Length: 90
Length: 454
Image 1 (cartoon, helix red, strand yellow):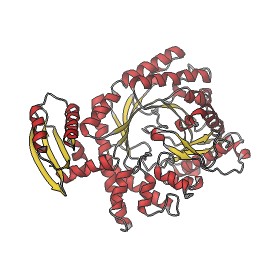
Image 2 (cartoon, rainbow over the protein chains, first blue to last red):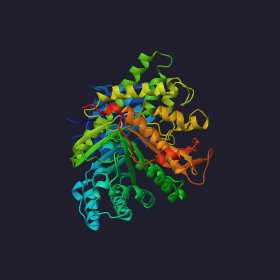
Image 3 (cartoon, helix red, strand yellow):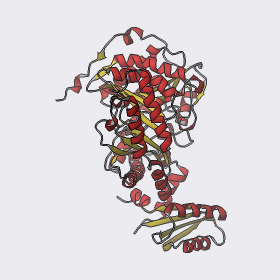
Image 4 (tube, rainbow over the protein chains, first blue to last red):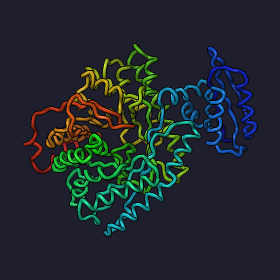
């Protein structure tokens, strides 16, 4: 299964997770795992998701999440897990 | 399972340290296009390039989006045109028509550059080779995206000094014909010794005759990533320094390998090589010279520079070679002057001279690269500079190259602006003593003794 890693970084504020999760639910993207930390007021979240059932393309999801991030005032990146696997696993 | 720290490390490299894939270069063989009818040849070339490369740019953009990694350039390299046009072209003007066809094809498919307007003449020039070389000034002045290279020497064959002499004139003519744009044409012309067949970087990329019909080669980058990693080990010993460079080079190269495999799969074109070069850009923090400073030099060019660069170049290769299934191209640290803010600063400070740059080219890829020199430099002097650099490549069994830009109408101390990735450069002084009598001898320099390995 192709997994997609979504990262959200920015100033902590009310409703970040809610907005991202709402978008993912509407796009039929399943969330497999969430880890989150707050360092010095900065919100830092990583989601492991399965976007294979989504009617949207990976590029479309990445673009729309980027736009959503700009609305909330955080940076949202959506990347295929392989870039991390390649770099950190032999 | 990947954890949040690893994800953050990768994304920090991309968003803050300028990690990118510098280029996906699609090599296309034009040997199947050859005919003795010039119009037909041009038609065949245009059709082949626009067919094979039609999805290249779109595929590159898809990969960028999906993996969240910038791919700065999508480029094409083709079979050296002197071979392709050999039977159809009866003059230099005939070759220029091919350059224009290549330019049209490059624009149609939307690539940044197309390389391969080239001739391989390390032992001698055919009539076609000479026509092509003489056509380079006009070809580069009348096209936008075509890049040209000439291989004038090799460890196996020696150096073709007739070609070296001719290229001194050709470089000056190219500068003259593009003087309205600060002699920009010369930034698209490279003279090589031991040119590799699978180099993905411009301006020297061409698709060698040893290659398959089409191939994907990828050039990675990441000087900023190496510099940031080294900032964490300031004052530590050489072992720690080398290990840090190796580990970083490994990570950077893995991204290149991933992009190469994906591009290859999606385009249905075999994967060729990953080029392990550290390629700078004029952007702040994307500089090879800054790495040298981080290693411990006040400026690039200070005593110790050659040793530091040798160490860097070697560790980049050692780290990168295990990260990719096939490594090739130029693979090493690039030291172009105009494309590297740290090198520009070093020249401005008086720390870096042409002679020191020549020494540095002995231990890294590729050579005297993107160096602006006074526009009144003599053709024979340029040939002398080329001959010196070719000799370094020939004797040391490595690739070396010269890409100098005599800026017409400008002199030492003035600055020239090329724009974009090509950057800007202060014009550097050149040794003014003559080498006319040396360059004007006919013939070639024989291959060195250690070329006889059979």
